[in-house]
Image (cartoon, rainbow, N blue to C red; front, top):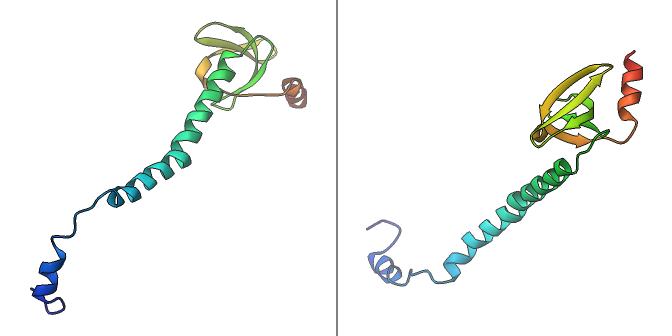
Length: 114
């Protein structure tokens, strides 16, 4: 068989290599590790974003996923109308809203820009 393993030793080890429940513990531990490290936090973040988007209303200051700062002027089920400057409006999808800002942030930024 080999120079380092005798034939008798190799033949004796082969039949007793049947894994039981112990053989499943390591793969299950890896799956649990990935669940708690990746899947659970991602699901929690998605749930929080869904709640934030459903709680949008007029007058809220937001930042879009493209980095546009604006104030919500009008909204419907799918789209949000944002005022990005004086008398300048854009429409974005609700899902592109990333962050709600504290009240007054929009005014401070627009006054600095003027």
